[in-house]
Amino acid sequence: MTAAIRLRFGGYQEPASIHNRAAGRFGELLKERLGDRVAFELIGSILKIGGKSGDLVPMTERGELSFCYMSTVRFSKAAPELRILELPFVVKDRATVFEALDGEFGEGARRKIESAMKVRVLGYWDNGFRHL
Image (cartoon, rainbow, N blue to C red; front, side, top):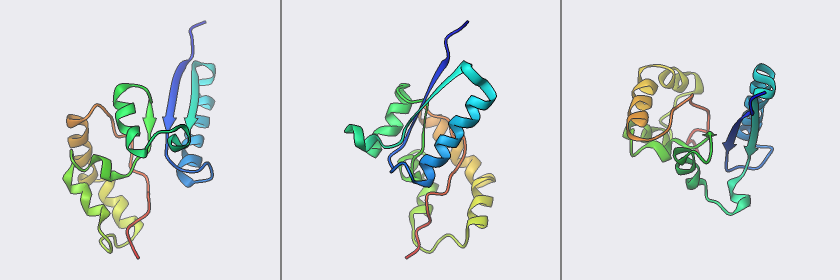
């Protein structure tokens, strides 16, 4: 029997956050589909082990983590167009922004990120929109 593939998913929020619950569900789905071939570990809050949220992307690039969730701000140097998502009152509604992220806008940003960084974008999550 071969050893399980070890997958570590890092985050920076409390366990009850929607992001950690979604990451946990991702791990459950991996286990359902792959069984003992995968060992999934969720590090829900890197802050609780002395890290900073900004450590997650470099840890993923170095292979210390397999996945992480992160605000687009950490990728905006590679894909400056993502900065628009940090501005208040720009996003009309979730449907509109996901249409853009799932379309040409998001695909262009993904290509820039992947060519400039040692990461792969699996998808875009809602991290809240900048409305007051």
